[in-house]
Amino acid sequence: MFKEELQIVPNKPGSYQMYNKNNIIIYIGKAKDLKKRLSSYFRMTNTGKTAVMVSEIAYFKYIITTTELEAFILELNLIKEYNPKYNILLKDDKSYPYIEYQKKPFPTLKVTRYLKIKKHKDKVLFGPYVNSYAARRIVNLINRLYPLKKCNNLPKEVCLYYHIHECLGYCVKKIPKEEILTMEKEILSFLRGNEDIIKNKLLEKIDYYSKEMNYELALELKNELKFIEVILEKQKVEFLDKEDMDVINYYFNNGYLTIEILFIRNGKLIGTFNDIFMVTDNYLEELETYIALFYQKNEKPKEIYLPNEINLDNLNNITLTKVLTASRGKKRKLLLMAKENAKVNHENNFKKAVLKLERTKGANDELSALLGINITRIDVFDNSNLFGSFSVSGMVVFIDGVPAKNKYRKYKILLDKNDDYQTMKEVIYRRYYRALLEKDNLPELIIVDGGINQIRASREVLDSLNLNIKVCGLVKNNQHKTNDLIDGNTLDAYNIDKTSKLFHYLTRIQDEVHRYTINYHKQIRSKGSISSVLDNVPGIGTKRKKDLIKAFGSVKNMQEKSIKELNKYLPIKIAENLYNYLKQIKN
Image 1: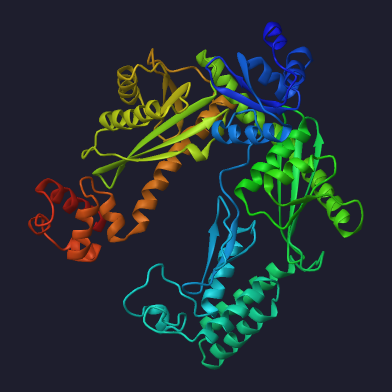
Image 2 (image 1 turned 45 degrees about the vertical axis):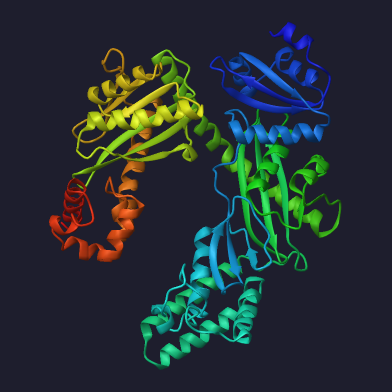
């Protein structure tokens, strides 16, 4: 296989890309010697994930580099751009939350997520916090105990926070610098590990509210004190003297690799992270790639400790921080601790990972066999009417049987009437016209949550765009449960065993797209502000929205106006739409 192509591959460093028959990159790797590495795929007996990947390769390409480090950097950039299905990828596209204290122009404290950390002299970051709930609760508590700036903008007059003594009134008052510095010193001291400051302040407040017979607030703060004590108890073990570091180790067995990261800040263990995945290539090289990608999305500590068999020089250059190993002392003990945790997590999660692969990749392969096509990506659509007039749509994506949540999309339908056929035409056109313009990856299968009408609408649009993509419909029964998969060409239902993995897979797909679309409804509805309400009415752009906000100020005021009064600011048709929409929200 590929005998002639391999003969001309040079013995030089570089990155290689494996393509399938649909011209999609399915794997990206790096090599010190391209010829040796590529030859190993086709001249050796492969097993597991590697064997499956090799069976899908239609051709390969490669890019020569000067050094192995350059090959590593190129590999990372290509993986981020193409997200190949056989490469090790992070669990999701989210970074860990941090607590951010901002000194200027006004002291503020908030939870933030940075996809790319930028150092700033007026900002201090604490974390990462694996438990985002704990981070938010700590920030909320500190904001209650200290009069920091709370609002996003700078209002013209003091707000409620000032009157309840949770803000110093930065919008209208000049606050003495000494007062801010005293408050700042206490907050930063607590976040750096001095727990007594907040605990004593809480006890003072509890005592004050108890004496004032405000027992409800006293009990509330007492519960906060218990929460803080529980959180701090988990960090009691002090490892090193006020050092910031991540300690990483792994365990590899049965073709699966488990990674364990210990986050140590100010000498305390503040959290851990672990992941398990099936590897395609050399597990140490894939581990290096995973670590490099991880620190492109999360803040780097001052030092990262790894076992010595990993290429420390490459990661030093990629992460731009100290990447070290340890052969003795406390740091060696931490590496062994991470190793032991990796082994335990591997043993606990291995069977789950194998079962998940059977439920996802296995079920996806069954669907491929049923439809007679090789399916990697599925786009799934659901349309839903919003409050009886305006429609929204959701698209979820499954790749190799697993939800790809970073590719989900929401659509606010421009059509001003409830028409499932036209709604489906609109969302399919918008999705795939844009995909063609942006040269986005197309699916092998489109599933619409609905029957023959939705299938015909989708086919009509795809034909107009000259796209040959298989379409199927998922139909529910009277109990609103998944019942049939309808073929988009014959319009006949497939005979699927209701107890099979495939049927459960289709049910998960239908439930996921329905959940995503319904949550979009709830999200819109829960915003509740005049601005977000106006966003839901077609024809109201930025200028008209500003005019309406200036004229009425609130949703309640608008709901009391007639079509004639709304018509002063809007064309009659849009005024009618807004009037009907506001009436339905009120009801």
